[in-house]
Image (tube, rainbow, N blue to C red; front, side):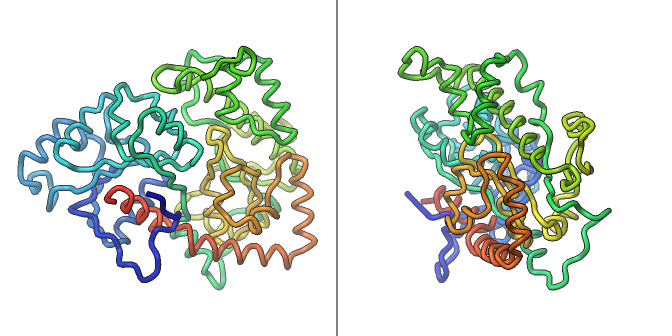
Length: 409
């Protein structure tokens, strides 16, 4: 079943999910609460519980007793989670849901093969899997996944509300430099995830050479390189699941991403750049550093910051070959202006919107900054067009509508 990203057409009655939708309190710090809020906005009864609630024995007890004994008003009709939170590696909890006839939907907002690296049995092949990067769909299906669909990220309501403000508030703190970047300096918990993995200096040098000339040494590029398929004519690389090969591939992609991100930021004169992030940026930039500041609250100051910044930069992760990030939605929704690297994932947007704001090499960034400084009318036109497109086509309510229609089709 193929549906557009916006599966909730005007005049179409909303889909009513059966029973109760259960979600996990923890998970992706940003996406999980947005998804739960969107489910409630669609008029569906939604309850969030911590991960302990979803242990196998607790699920068995849930269906053996009246739901009120667990603090629920009815038995659930869907378990929806982000990044496998609430599911154990051996699939015992999923088996309980399956036996009760309750579908389980997992939204993989990170690289799904990295998430699957922690799963020990094939139970995941019977889940409803949703991935934010469409390039993973065919590979997961070939590996045996029975229900895999593309479900991109979307704009949060706080950013859409900021974009509607007639008199936007001033940004917090000192004045911003013309270009702003908000993001981490490194892969979260990098040392633990990549323990025992190593990438040779020759491969890293090749990836860096390709990146600065406009090629993207992404997850699949590294899979082919490390499998030796190009040198030895191997028909198929090693499987991405099970085994540790995926972690080595991902390490290559992450190291390339870190290099690419820093190269793009260094292309901007330091006196023209403000970076909001963790303390790791300080050591990466060294003495010639831009204006470095700590993270701002996603649900507090960030929408205002995006709206007030002259330009916001977005560099995508090579772990997601066709993936987008929250900046691609939130910056425009807030009425800001986003300059982004030319990831193939941008094909989901109209080309007349993406082409003017993309760069393929770090050296193109100063040229883009200068171009739109000279043409404020065109910058304002693009801002309005992007904002309207995001508001019309890319909200979390629309994503949850699509998810439910696919699960209950």
